Image 1 (cartoon, rainbow, N blue to C red):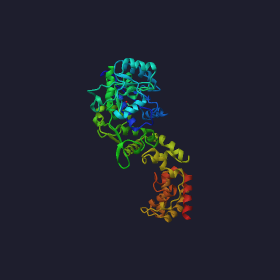
Image 2 (image 1 turned 120 degrees about the horizontal axis):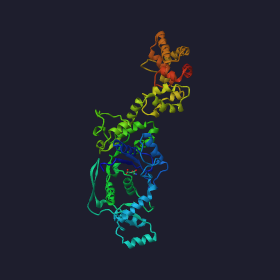
Image 3 (image 1 turned 180 degrees about the vertical axis):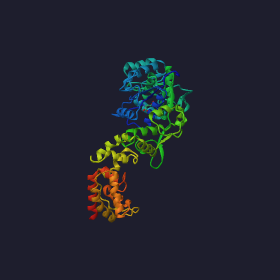
Image 4 (image 1 turned 90 degrees about the vertical axis):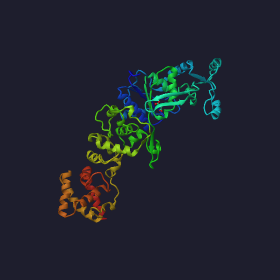
Length: 492
Ligand code: GLU
């Protein structure tokens, strides 16, 4: 196996949205393959047709595209090991299941649903009733067209061990293993069988997935053994937990907030920030054997290429990691701040345009927002006062630090209105000069003037940017209209 090219896969079931946990599995499997110049396959595991959710495949494809994971083989692009939609491999699974029956490691089971329900309570599983049926009896059932499933014939004693590249040696007692179903009555293979056959036929030599499969993997390893195939490397990831608002830690679920990647994007998180953050959940660059020298072990920011360069199985951990929204928000804020201006503008301006009047200076507004927001979605919330004139809030004019009152602001606004109106150039320097000169002439503190103007045009206390910046964003006409309106209202 040493000379083989590394091949990993992501094998999601299209049973819903793309959970953060699945995304991490996809990411790590991709990073493992690419860090070793290997292949990465996408396979859709849809043999459980009852659980399939319409549109789920599109969500998977869209998610991978947004985070920049490019698969070498998979649905849509094909490859030499297709088809990559598991339900289209039904005949292959059946062929291998029958082979396994011939090899004596699987058997037909004709038990009816009623019988299975009856015995389930007494033995907690399947009682192996059909495991040793005589050949004639089997033939008789088949000739009659009786429905059947195919079950794996587990060894009855001893134990099975496999070595996980992350968790070490894992052993289960064979008596704990059920004769699990490989082919269901509808002819489709179960996950338990289909993924083993497909991984083998697709040349997957590193099976990386969530920790929930650690203790079922011996069953899969036995299938490889039964076929006489070389087992792949197994790499199970640590559990991913969530933290609720009270700080309680439990398996990641909706209770902890959005756990779907696309929901997070919808809420204004950047795909690259999400990827960066989840890469650090269960993997640590300092533990790895990255190929870059002079590693800064406190480094936290990684592009996809840097992650590929640094990734190694040695960097994985076993203890559960916690998906923490505060930490994600921190990453997102940092990513937004570090974004090149053009890129930030291109991401935020379209949504600003949806809520703000077309006359405002969008590029300037975006620049006021960039250092102040934690998610892109916060941008639209923060510009409510630009989108429309907020209701009058007289109290906002009162400010202790600047010693302003409603009355003092009214007086300032009345005097400043004609001065601003006469300002020829609508630039930051010119507007600032008007306010500064007025401060000098009137003897009023500049701070109190800026306060009055800013509240008059914004009608709220906290704004991105100061008075002159907001005047520029709004433009001359809207600014003057708002100041005039403020004068009228404060006179009432
Ligand atoms: N279809 C399985 C799942 O979505 C894949 C598990 C595996 O990677 O083997 O959980």
